[in-house]
Length: 93
View 1 (cartoon, rainbow, N blue to C red):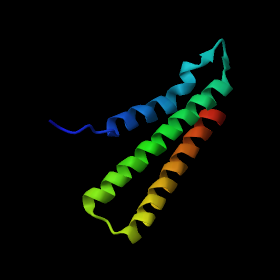
View 2: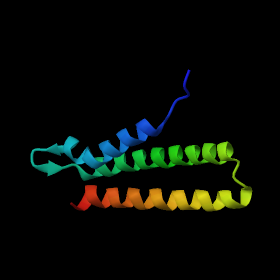
View 3: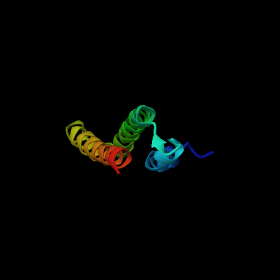
View 4: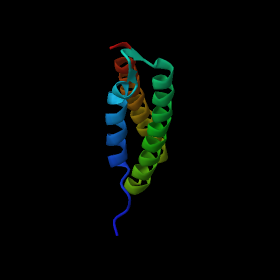
């Protein structure tokens, strides 16, 4: 039996985050506090999943302890930039 691959959930969550404004467009106005709250919940979930997948990558590829810090830093910075740009798109566009 194959192990569970969380990548499919990540793609689904990114799709939902980029289209979440359609879910809360009520009567011509947005509900911004609800959108922001849900966005931060998804962001925390995504960062947690990315760090757990990074941990599994480091274990599977047997990456040295010195290089693991750089791998975590690079992935976390890239995901943070992606999440910030998604937040700007949802909030201001």
